[in-house]
Length: 122
Image (cartoon, rainbow, N blue to C red; front, side, top):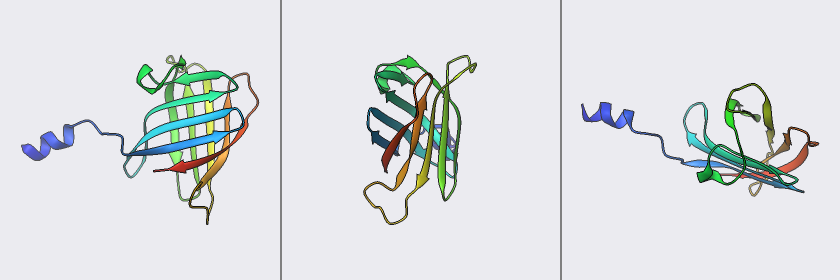
């Protein structure tokens, strides 16, 4: 019974991806599982901010639409709460040999050009 209750406990954020670029920032909190599990996120590009909740920071509300990761890439799409429009997309590639910024890619938000970003991960 105790083991069953432990499995039912909420997953705590145990890591994430933190990205910066010229006029862009991405903060994605993730659980460490065998699949990509986004727990929350905040994205800002050229002053346009989106957030999965006030605990993540200010911004237009968004939810995770989809997330994918393998040995070479990580991809995230965030939508409006009704899942009618993609508000932000993050595409990352793993950079071999770069311990400080092991991920690099682009972030795009609705109505703004994509920005290059470099990311650290925990």
